[in-house]
Image 1 (spheres, helix red, strand yellow):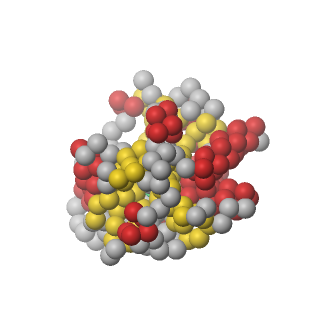
Image 2 (tube, rainbow, N blue to C red):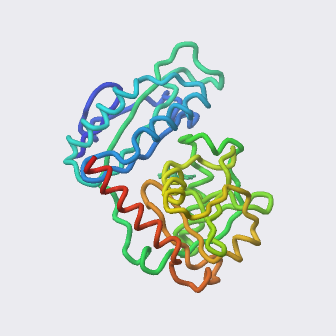
Length: 283
Ligand code: PDD
């Protein structure tokens, strides 16, 4: 049985219980992070803790732990769950209080953390690419906050799944925002484009890594608006997330992307990404 962390205690998962009055349960009032773990070590932990702070500030919840306390607790949980490749999920809610839309005067934030074995990325996704569909972006106007309130994302992802696709690429006012659970990129004539960071897009930690790697490799990259027409005319499309790394999209709305194979720019970046994972584990 997996060990989880709940409000200061390490517990067997089945013993972890929260109140029905928790505002996470009643209002979806909380924020979260998903952190990949390779060979027992967190990947890009600093970036995830910085984004957690940003999300907490965005919804005005005090951070209940220091970065050192987060790091130590997360590492303890990873170790107790046997190391290896895991995905840490953590969430902080505003806490337990009588139901009222207004913030409670003095609730204590609830902290829940679990770490599960990383779901392997199917080889076929890398070898042949994935299928995506475009869908209208029906989410709220603060998608830069990593809120636990994921009903819209869940509906979009489910719709993609029911159409045999692995991800939905979201369109708002004629331009690409991101995937239902990933950031998105296109390549045209060897240049990478990704939507700029704004309130329509989650500031992805994997996206930061992709930007860094592209710069180190001297590959031109622009953060700018991508129209729906540009998306459909791209040579390559990729998505990125902490749990799916970088995946090439080879079929979009039932049309092949470029020549229908994972492209050379993705190939180069995913190779650098794998090197970085190794380096962080050694370092
Ligand atoms: N989601 N955009 C959205 C809407 C996401 O949900 C995610 C990740 C990303 C990529 O961010 P990052 O590179 O920091 O993982 C972008 C996680 C994995 C999830 O909800 O499970």
